[in-house]
Length: 82
Ligand SMILES: [Zn+2]
Image (cartoon, rainbow, N blue to C red; front, side, top):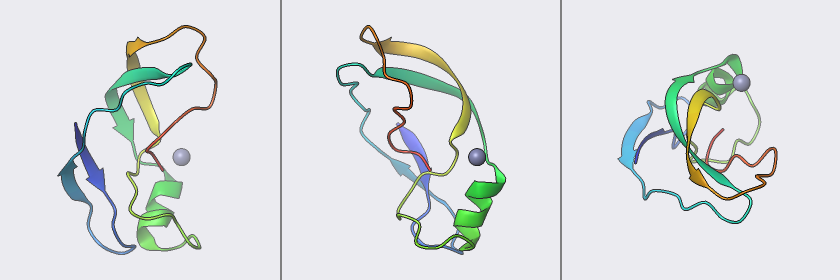
């Protein structure tokens, strides 16, 4: 899958290829249809927040459709995003 990563605050995002994730028990795989960048993402990119865990993929506010997964997903499981 394609992703844009932030490796250092104040630097441009860099396009990368990452392996497709595999949903674990109780998780869903979602196809991201659209993704927004919020003020918090901009603060992370600009270095306005202390000690962000880098590298990261900004953009945790998105519209997605279900792609695959198992029954009974947990709420709040959101690997790999800011
Ligand atoms: Zn946000």
